[in-house]
View 1 (cartoon, rainbow, N blue to C red):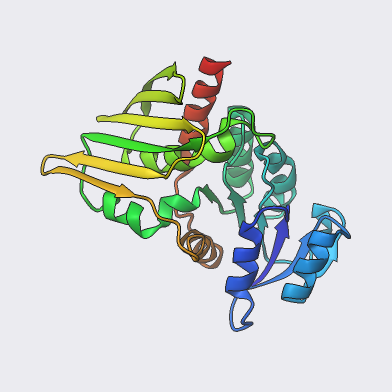
View 2 (cartoon, helix red, strand yellow; view 1 turned 45 degrees about the vertical axis):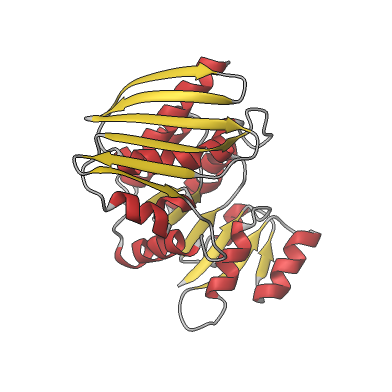
Length: 267
């Protein structure tokens, strides 16, 4: 499988190239963005072809990763490949607006092109431990955000605690209540039958999560080791091989809906 990458400023690109460069399976063969110091270093790292525009990857690759830091770029960069029927991984967040996220899902469905998107924290071992606890009565997650981030405000980092919380709390988002405090944005939501609390901390903070079930409460710090991106990458590669997305379209949209509600509340 030949993989192309769009948007190379993200450090996740290094994780992908390093994990796949042994040449015995799927491999990154090309990146877009034209000549730059960053792309030259990646070209040398992976013996890659560098093209100018994202569409120039068409015909060169069998699947693509859209890795732009700013989610507002994802729709335009992913759509040509979805229309070509290629598997697409959109790095977090899927989009920064419900309109863009819904359009991406519509293109995926219209062209039978498998697509996935997630926070890397969704798949790490600590999150798996929480998910294994069983049906949750209450879910609490936290992590840092920067509302003034040039890469989409709270979407850029807020997707991490939100995506983890919604993995642990299935079902429709019934209500969202947002309170902006001096040190954090406190989000309380009713999701399916689960009470969800998400603390979006203003400044540096660890990622944490907890699940309360009928058996008690389990808490974890969500630790990012040197290979934290690999489980999510493997989920994408499996999708590209089987055509079966690891996350439903509804679950791709739920984090965008929740973060959009938070964005509107703090505007």
